[in-house]
Each structure stands twice: as structure tokens, then as C-alpha cells.
Image 1 (cartoon, rainbow, N blue to C red):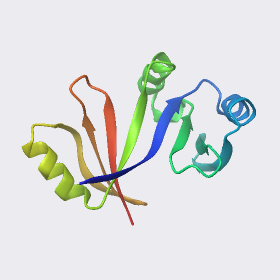
Image 2: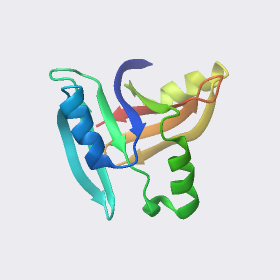
Image 3: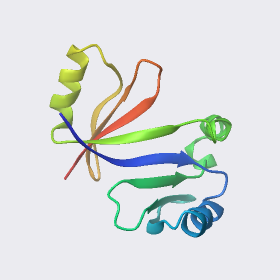
Image 4: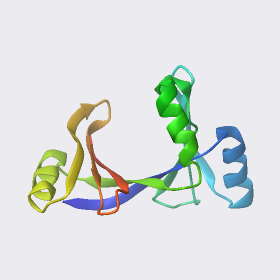
Length: 131
């Protein structure tokens, strides 16, 4: 089952401005800043020594025009919480038996296996089994 909270995603208008604000205003440290696809970056910040990281995500047209516009509309209105699991497929099966809505079935990704669920209000969660 779920074993830890690892990341939370915050949508931002400009990732460089957000890095500056989180590091200068909150004293967070920059953990990752890497381009993973053209025009798309993986950026995380966290309190020094903290375990949970904040992923700063800037909507990009690389996601698709409609998706980027939808993401921009959500800036400041919510987050996605990442939950660590030991076995993503088994966890999804157990959660599904309990009536949890699965919005993305488990799939292999470069870092392991992941799936998506939502809570009773539609708040999204990403279940991640890392390699």
C-alpha cells in the first residue's frame, strides 16, 4: 500500500520566477532542474533536509494547446500529490476493490510504474513505484 509522500506539484506561470521565489522567500533548496523534453523541465524545490519535494510545473504548449490552456486556468487552484507505493499494480487493484476511482491504469515509465487516482472530490493523486 501507500508508504510515503514524496512530491507535490504546484502549477506556476514562470518556473524561473517560481524557483527564485521558493528559494529566496521560503528558503527552499533547488533539488532538480533538468530539461526532459524540448521546452519542458523537471524542477523541484524542498526545505533543506526535507523529504517531500515541490515540483514546480509551468504549463507548456508541448502538452498540447488545449491541455496547456487548461493547466494555466488551474494555476493557484490546486495541486497533485505523489504517493510512493511498493507495488503499484497491487495497490491499484486493492484501491479499486475499495471503490477508489482509477483515472490511469498502471503503466511502465522510465522511473518505474505509475498510476493515477482521484479522491471523492476529484483531487488527483499519482501513485509511484520507483525502480
